[in-house]
Image (cartoon, rainbow, N blue to C red; front, side):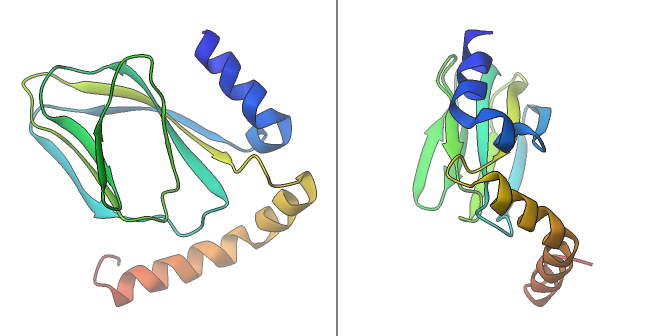
Length: 133
């Protein structure tokens, strides 16, 4: 739990008040195709929990990295990114999306107020790229 404590200390209560936290498991032979987020107001953190040896990695923009136990990966998901697991075992990471630590509580409040509109605009953008319904 020291890593989770470090995350909360780094981001603070305002950024983590409305965060997303979930377990991301990539089964063997799984590939998440290239995609991107709609806003850079949140950062995506991957905390590796169980990473098999071999070709399990994430590409963000032009950089590709594997996950290493204990080493967190933090990135802005507005950059094109994809992940894969070409091993024989599942890969598990704790995935956290938190507001950028440099945003003030007031700025976060404004972002939350416009979140429904932002989601609508993002869906329309995906449709123009042939990626959405």
